Image (cartoon, rainbow, N blue to C red; front, top):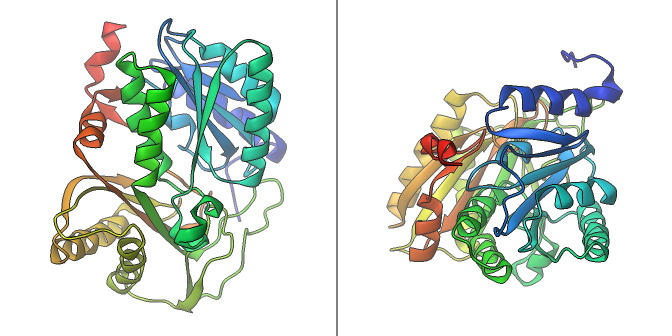
Length: 338
């Protein structure tokens, strides 16, 4: 696979530097693998630190900004960030009211963020953690804590970031983040793999006329390989799994993410979104808002995911709150008030 890079071992550092320069009006680089919002730290506000492996841009670096996360910390491509970097991010944004960690539920991230929390405690910084486990294909409802995280963390960070902006205490910010997470469900499908820049090797193999339902963000084991289906057929399979899992009912109101994995075109995502809206209408479920685009990518993997977040009045209010980041842009004039 051809890639427009320099030294494959430098892709993470060089990409962070370039991304930060593009959005220097919103974010700043505070260490080689740590990016914070430009006005951090903010005294008297709960801070939110997100993180994970690079290679999924704009997740998580694109979630940093006003009304969103205060900092993002990266590991190598598809690898968890190390505890010292997590501590650096924590100290860079701590405003004295505690720090909430939000990240995908993967073993490496769990271990390293737990270690980072222990190191922060030694520095006198209180932390709490919300692990996102929205991937319905990776575990049964009874074993939901074993599920992987996918792009549901976009909604979780948006809700938590809005709550933090109100001056809420750490426990309250954590509570709404957990509510958002517990109301999110995601299902993914891949048509072809991404590749690891350092090796050029694909993350999984699949036949040219096949598709893989239920894959993880790195191409982890899915639930079913099939012959290539139409977009409408694929959406019907994906949405059925999501709707039955929460479960969602007639009269519910939801926000949607139609997420592309890197090489999926906006044309394709729009076709997926069209059928998603049709099926939700047929089920009596109202769509409040749709986010569509590449939010969690896997290099050039082809495919997409669908996420639903079931809303109540509190989640709707927090979702509608102002935000300004490289990924979410609601009321950009807010930035000038800082």
